[in-house]
Length: 269
Image 1 (cartoon, rainbow, N blue to C red):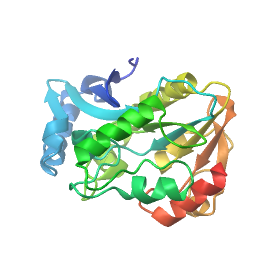
Image 2: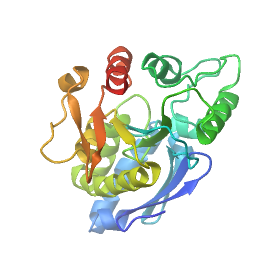
Image 3: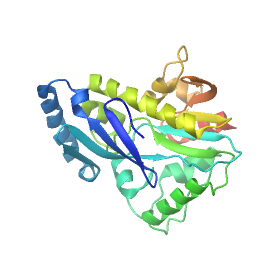
Image 4: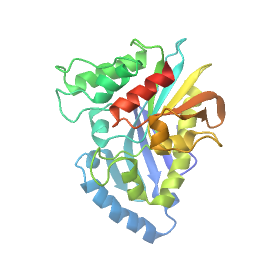
């Protein structure tokens, strides 16, 4: 895998990507790169997990990300769930939506997906996070779960950030990169997602976004622009950019557990 732009990436089993961001392609002058490095040091020090996920090597920022797209086929329609960006602690623990503490299960697995009627991939909380993540990856890879769909998971922005604080989420990545560089990165990220969709889907496929940038980047032209109100009302409906036969739905962010699950269930009923 790879890219012609500043972002290069390759698959790393299970469910991960190793990414390299060419800073010289994002920032044309040494001064801009030095300014970025000053921000990067603050970003890195804001969460202890960042030091285990990112490393700066000259003009390259190397980091781990996540993407879980099963290669195994089935006769079920494919469902691609596109989130904003990874949580750094989930990268370290090895799976999307990992809890920070053992003995807990993230609400995404425990309530949101079952509530939406998609799949039940929650496991016994007596198991360690490591064991639950291993079981979940194996189940998704081998399609060994009860669902009407063949499910794939990916993020729109590959760069991880903390789950809370001033550097959290996609907004934290934009704060780190700056708006101009962020827009350049998004061009590569969009192409990555569209490439995933083309290989993941066969005759039938659905894409669901959970975040503003993902919806705006993946929607076809002349379809509604993002608003949280439209997402709550289940009115972010369109088609995937360049793939008019693939429905695209926008749902509220996962932190809005009830509305997100309700709208997701409506779209996939």
